[in-house]
Image (tube, rainbow, N blue to C red; front, side, top):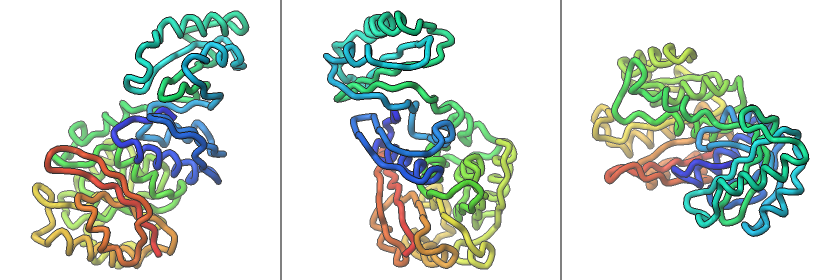
Amino acid sequence: MELSMECESLARSEALSIGRTIGSRSDAVLVDEGILVIDTDADPIAFVERMALCHSASEYMCSCNPEDVQEFSSAIDVPGPVRVHATRIGTAHEHVDLAELNSSVGAVLGDAVGVDIHNPCSEVRIVFSDKVHIGRLIGSVDRAAYERRKTKNLPFNHPISLHPKFARCIVNLVEVRPGKRILDPFCGTGAIVTEAALAGAEAIGSDVSEKMVDGARSNMTSVGVKGRLHICDVGSISDVVKHVDGIATDPPYGRSSSTNGEPVPDLIRRAFGSLSKIMDAGSRLVMVMHDPALADCAEDFELIESHELWVHRSLTRHFCVFVRR
């Protein structure tokens, strides 16, 4: 995987979670800046379709030092015709002329199987990070689709709504298989329930605000998906939703978010207590927090990982993954 770099640890965790969700195994084989190689039996096309914090995924062939690229490339065996695409993570090995490398490797491969830069059978990707990684492209993530689903492009919006790519990421971190039930008990404008539905889950959302629930329903309809949405305080969620397989949520945390005057720590504490009643042991709750100390409120849960994303001067998001004890 060629990872996007908004939060690299979060992107790695998302990829590994997807492998476990739609396959039976997911093991990190190699980690380099902006690069993750995993061993998984997940369907590769389905894998790419689920990813958010990634640019592309390739069938891994090899890794080498920069000076050995030509030698390793000459041993590549893929169906032709081919296209070669060399790129780098950030400024890695910036002295290397990527255009020249494309030409030279393409010439070597072209002698064997032919070259077609417009309609190739195989695209060979050569990615420079600390090492150089070579693979055959499986597919690219449609990052533009996440941009189109931002709330500013939908019927109902709110200034601090979670970006769809992060909403999809936390849905993936929940590790709920298609057809299973994912709940967002603070659904707001519906970004998380929308991404859950698009990922094939049975999407359930609730919010104490009737305005937000109506807005979330409107947004989901505009995207072409459906979910079960309820007007409900999180403390009463077990009266409305009896059982879920996982929870993904981004609770309100003050300022323009509404907590109906309730202190945020009290709200989060109530949420954990209520949500634990509708979850089985071992199931996952992924919560975005502005203050990681609030994880101490999760008495019935174990925090297994946390990823920090700086948003702006007054906001840092912490993507916290909990497992129900």
